[in-house]
Image (tube, rainbow, N blue to C red):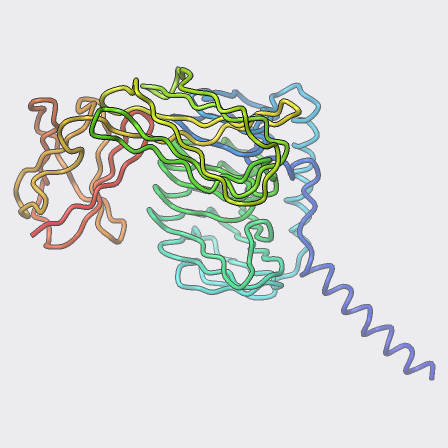
Length: 408
């Protein structure tokens, strides 16, 4: 009888230990509310980055907000919140050191499908890369421990299936993290080094660094653990033929909603009021659509921003969207283009716009600016380009547009 009881207790203990080691997320403490934070490093942003969640640094310079927008608190060196978050980030990172490895994974993450409830490890000194899509499947916790730096490629992504959520994904990175241009990353990053988001990269989760700088460039970062009082389904701005702009937004849930403010800007820095919508019901759990027309819209490229205020006075600023009012079509012509020919890009600021040409696989191709004519940018590929479809990425006034270019 005692032997059987001992066996039962032993099995129960092992099950509990397995649940503790493999099934629990690391305790983030006060860092739970942060979308981006570094315990020791500078925090910089370029362009119109949008961050939902707290941001800050405990040691280092802070800049870039504005023009960046944050829906949350900014915690700076000297504040008790930054000091405590620094302790909690280090503690969370160190707590993952004791998690035993369940499965070794290849240093190239693309093409792999990982199941929840397992601690994955990459144990080589070579940098870990993601040159495509990493799929995470299941409703449990994912812990992925990398013994070197992590770099994701242009337009790479993490896909969540079968109930997987970004809140259950944790990457421990013994080094720096660089998210590629236009890439999509999901999960909490606990990094030993710097965290860099290249142009247009998005992060659904958190970026937390023990000892490295955080650098943003026109990015979208959302800590999905922070629920918003209003669930915004869409926000659109469409140019009309009479040089006005039709603005519309749809919500699926509103809690203690006081109203909306719509603003416009020419350069994403100074915004002016278009209209305020305040005579609305405070609560709703069904789809609601709002619409207004800006009859004093700017010509060329402009930006619209939606701000929501709840009954307690809390303000939520949603990412700005762009619209173009001009007589000529915005984009590439001729399209298709010949493989060694010149082509033209219609845009508002041809002298300062950043332009890159990518293959569908994300490979950067050489492109030469050869002049400006009638306000349009003249471009030429410096070598012959094979027949196919390419992406022309244009960064202008802090916003990124992608144009589909056909080469024949």
